[in-house]
Every structure is written in C-alpha cells, then in structure tokens.
Image (cartoon, rainbow, N blue to C red; front, side, top):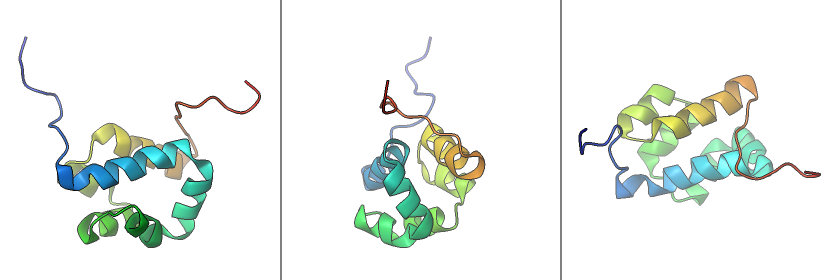
Length: 94
C-alpha cells in the first residue's frame, strides 16, 4: 500500500472551479444558466481567467491538466455531451 494519492489534492486557487462544477451537478437551473452564459457564471463563482477560458471552451483535458479533479470534469462532460446527470439530491417526488 502507498501513502500517495491517486489524484493530487486540488490547488487552493481551484476551489472556485471545484465548487462551480459540483454546483452544476446539483442545480439544474444553474446548469442551464451556465450553458447560456458560461463566462458570466464562471466569473460569478470567482473562477480565474485561465480556468474560465477552459470552462468556456469546454476544454475537458485542459481542466484535468490544470489539476481539476477528473471525476468532476467527467461529470460536466457527461452532463453537457450526453445529458447524463449525477446528483446527490433526490429528484422531486421521491
């Protein structure tokens, strides 16, 4: 067994990106707003210019290369490309 992490801990500069990606999975209204206004939503969450550009361009490999957790990036890609959403909240009526 090793003490090394499979994925490195995210950089403090990327907390806003991680928060945004998580919230996009949890809030369909926010997700729809993000689709229409990626740059504005990213800035509202305090995402820096470099990460905002990666999000606006939907540069999934670039986000991972920057150090964004791959699972969050894949969840974003699945939601955008295939309409698949993973959420921790139960759908209404359950």
